[in-house]
Length: 605
Image (tube, rainbow, N blue to C red):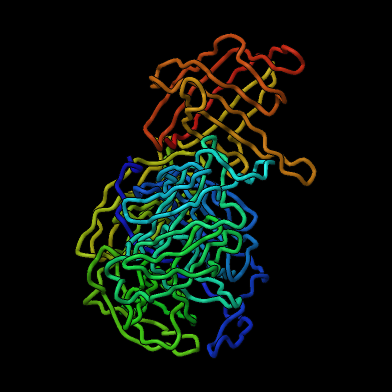
């Protein structure tokens, strides 16, 4: 199945769509600094893909943009249209249980749709220590965090005394030379310095750190206390790393880094003190200007979804990589007053660029206009085809999904069910997978293997039929029927997870719909848990938990309830089942409710 296709490690640094509006300019120690405008709002749009640490798509991650929230589909895809966001720092936040938040920041324009790829960092326990005595946590990659005695507090506790229990530390170091850094790191490497100016940052290493009690409460460093972090410096950057470097923490609210303190070089480490935990970063700041260009072929046809890398000639590690949009346009930020090298790649797995040139940036914005890629260095697959539904009628409400070199691409269909797009090739013919999906019927095709060649590629008709993608949870309480799954997310949403907190370990199915009560959005939930052990198609599992919003008090299962499993696919596929029984509510005392239900939800674990 598609979700089992191994994705390749990629390096994508999204270059935000830029504003032509000038911000306030100040003089900062003789250098031009910019006070960022974080109040102007526009209607912005963005889409993207979310993957896990193994580069596999994450289904069901909550993604926020402006005041809207949606959930990733089975391919890790999400999209927002025309949401009111901060123009110069529009923040996309991804939350998924067991992972650090994935956060990207873009500069939004009303006439462009931003695109991001976000790779989540697992929130793995790196070690633990006792809060009263303190301790040292060291990761295999060298990241070290030292905690003094009595330096931890529990913000949720009414007790002001230092937290003296066990402290679990989740930590991860982000290598500044790693290919996938840009997908993992938060923000877009812009930060606010101690003078309030916005700067472009070159990272020499960053870390994500969170503290938890054994019961899951999030802990912090106590007021007046500090922890010491030692960031490893990659060998390739040691010779260019300064002896002292500013420290920056990430502000998840603004989507920008903020300067706070400094670190000192000690051998192959940067060592600094921090007073709280979030993401921390060792960065050299610089001024920047805006950059843009259009990438086209010899006929002037735009080359979409190809890579443009810009590096300082004197410092190749200070680079930015962007992806062209559907019109071949790319824009972003580059260091001012510098000599720069521009390279275009069909794919970042390709070692050789298909085009390169050097150019100079001064203290004014740079536009290189159209960059023409010679025909002799470029192979492009021009793809066309169509999708039909189970009745062989054209699909107008759907899309074609392509997986190429580990990247997922999604293209909308024309009204007649057809699609056309162009794909640059790396080294000759390339194998891809296509999937057609019909949103109206909730059906999709099986993955279709196809070999892309230079020139015209006429793909045979794909029938979006054979796999039902619909999810639902229908249930009744004392004969009153309820349905979830009628309205697409974010109104009706579904969650699947496995928990050890129920005894025995259980699969939990949760469904939610949003009801409007006056001007308030009220979530209505149903959740059931059942024994995980032995779950398979055709089995019956003991229900371990039942909850609905319609029963306002806690419930206990009256007599054993069996959940009949009628479908149990692999992760990314579906689990279906039904149940019938009774539960006891605490209020009024010992009230019995007769409950039934049937469900179909996509598995995420």
